[in-house]
Length: 41
Image 1: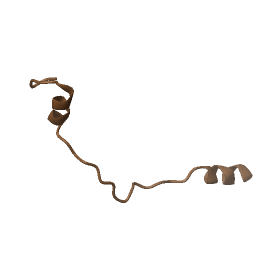
Image 2 (image 1 turned 90 degrees about the vertical axis):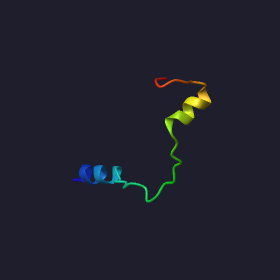
Image 3 (image 1 turned 135 degrees about the vertical axis):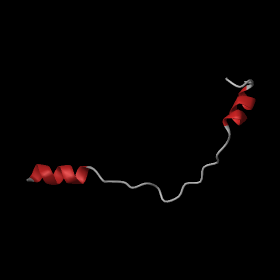
Image 4 (image 1 turned 45 degrees about the vertical axis):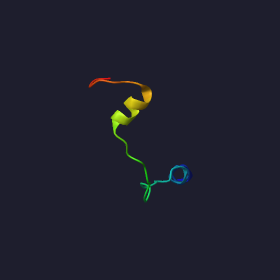
C-alpha cells in the first residue's frame, strides 16, 4: 500500500504548454545563412 502511494506521488502528469510563440522560418533561410545553394542541400 505504501509503495503504491509513493509511486503515485513520483510522477506528475504535465499537460501541453498553454501558448508558446515560435518564429517560423523557411528552410531556405537557413540554407542561405549557411551558404548552401541549389534545390537539394
